[in-house]
Amino acid sequence: MITTTLSTLIEMMLDYEVITFNNPKTLIESGLLENEKIDLVISDFIMPYMNGLDLLSLIKEKQPHIIPILLTGYSDKESAIKSINELGLYYYLEKPWDNSELIKVIQNGLDKAKLEEQLSQKLVVIEKKNQEISRLYDLLRRDFDKEMGNVLEFIVSLTNLVEAKDAYTDNHTRRVSDLAIALGKRKSLTQEQLRNIEIGAMIHDIGKVSTPESILNKPGPLTTAEFEIMKNHPEAGARIIRPISALQKPSEMVLSHHEKLDGSGYPHGLKADEISIETRIITISDIFDALYTDRPYRKGMPLDKTLSILKEDADKGKLDQELVGFIFEMAESGELQAIYHE
Ligand SMILES: [Fe+2]
Image 1 (cartoon, helix red, strand yellow):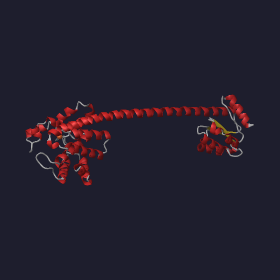
Image 2 (tube, rainbow, N blue to C red):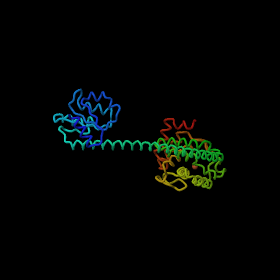
Image 3 (tube, rainbow, N blue to C red):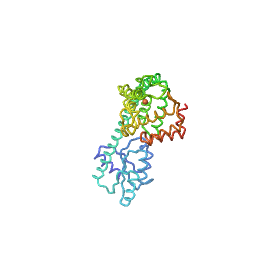
Image 4 (spheres, helix red, strand yellow):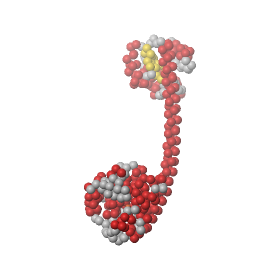
């Protein structure tokens, strides 16, 4: 009697098809749950074979989007309330129900289901758009990497240009670059910063193409006048690199790689915060390599002597303390020696 009343009411008031069962077993065995999409279910609580809560949770497993409503007698109210959270019960109605309340509850439940479906469709569209965006990003990234590859080839050839002129630059740029990248990693710099450091290190002395060979390869200390000419190479280098827009950051490193934190460096006498971490890294790597390896007028210094000079400069406030500390750590772990014995 209840199912007939309910289905008549719902079909009259709402434009929905209603299917009724008088026993949970008949519903389960009908195959309906496996073969039809059902929007909403109203179940009694006390029934033969299984109770309403067990039936609703079984239906929800098979039809996750369904709106479950429970009809209860006054005495079952407690368990109905508990199951609201547990089961995701949409509503419970006490018997005897009020027709207009029942219709309102059903209508709201169906509206909610429709909104949820629209939302999940929108999410699918958004997910597709996201995939499209990451595909485009990958394409752009590939273009950029190709472009950077071309720039790097050009840089290697610029480096070769200086090395051809300055006999003692032999492999200096490669080692400075290896050391600078290792320091940058210890400092936890980003991939972009590391790439700029690698380029900056490779081209830091590019300005030496403008320095006379007699000064570059002089087998003895430079006179003051010669040193003044030598000191032009950072600005000359920056002028060469600046027109390449992809190399703005590295050109700054080229310009400032002889600056010291206490303002005693050249060409601009920059101080502490005016010198970027990338440039500080190149400066220290350059100094370490210049001291440790053979120069035109003297043999390279032993490692401990080289390290103590760096420490002195750091103590005087010329070099970055933390970076010099990293070089000591690298010497201890053997990482430093590996760069020099490859
Ligand atoms: Fe230099």
